[in-house]
Length: 123
Image 1 (cartoon, rainbow, N blue to C red):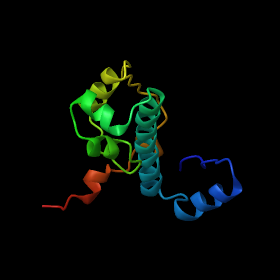
Image 2: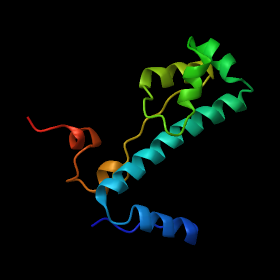
Image 3: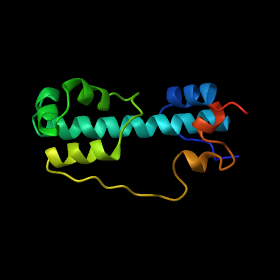
């Protein structure tokens, strides 16, 4: 069993325990959602720090404002490395990827199948 997640407030802890608890699949989905939200927040922070609107960033990147809006949505899971590089270049930044042992969805339960594998039907 994975160690119990500790959150900052009693209300958040109660909600986490009640909705996610010790269920490895829910823990994995929660961790994946945190990663998606973090990427979206970083894009938003870079854009606003640069003083750009979504439309202005889209023009620099060569995409649409709606694409930038999607990328800044915490629920969006389609961030591609190529698009992140284009955004970083447009904002005079670079993309850095790190693999950290013991963190992330795979550390929740190494025996748990990926979300894609869980949804595949057996042939």
